[in-house]
Image (cartoon, rainbow, N blue to C red; front, side):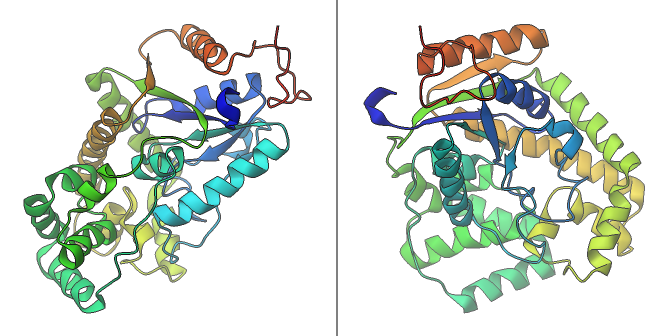
Length: 330
């Protein structure tokens, strides 16, 4: 590999664009192991609302960073970066291709470019004050504060992601610098021989898929999943419970709205989330974009061509060949 850097394949795209099915076919062809790049799939017991891949869907491909902590345990981008970096080294040591698949932009980008997460300190009194504002006036009010001082971070963070909104406000409170400016100051050189594939889709079709996915989640038992989480002692204010699908259904279970209203809100918020994901990805560099409106086989062939060109390796792998040894380079 160029410069002696270890290879890293990354597949990104908005929710419901079709990453899961495509990732399995890529992993089988390229002797890869998949690392989930989703901030919610780390939590145990949160399967339906996160569209977590099932054992059957994995088709024998090993997956990492799924079901690694309880829903009442905070899990940050820095935590992800550490665990993901360890997983990449482990996968590569066994001659496999490390393959990140997910849509959480900050998590994925922090690994791709080795972000240094600044220790700006903390102000617990400030955090508690911000939390009270969210509790009394709603998450949108807090998000509006962030929009006034750091519109770039506000664009990238969902209003329901109260913990990260508070952290962005806290960084500005402590340093006078916006969180987004600190991120933009990060180095842009990757420690990996990096290949990033981005999946896109016509917005109307993407929104239709999102609505269909949420309807399927409801049929699969999302309400019962959220009920069980709450009954098992997961606090409603836990970071995990602020995720899409969980906050809205929890509000229904707490008698704050009808189920129909909760589902309508979930669909709206998920569409907005997908828009924010695409906005984040547009700021990333060197992405090979694939239009998922095309034929699946054609898309897969196009991705194989991109990988062959990037890694200078012919696609003739079997399960017992080492990616790092070059496989059947000709």
